[in-house]
Amino acid sequence: MSGGRQPGYLPQARSGAAGRGLVRPRRGRLVAGVLAGLARRFGIGRWTARILFLVSMLLPGPQVVAYLVLWVVMPREP
Image (cartoon, rainbow, N blue to C red; front, side, top):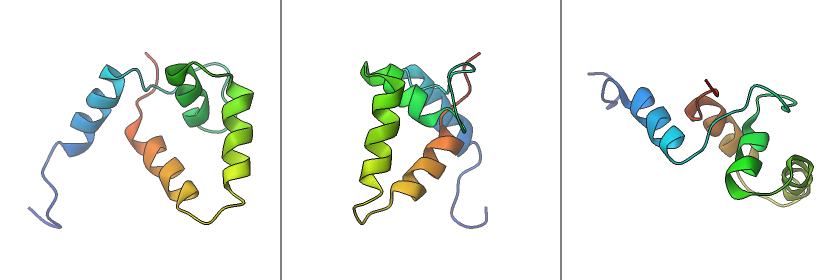
């Protein structure tokens, strides 16, 4: 085991996200579908989620890192 990671962590994270309704849709996405998936999960419009993300970019914080992590963890819609 290198780096302290357990084997199979990513599949477990993806199945956990899918179980909570966090999936990246195949339709209606612009880049990776992360914001479209979050919008669907929380019951808001896709463009509302996108605008909120863009506005949040004006504030300091790890928004881009969070987006990239969600891109890896959120599974694609079957």
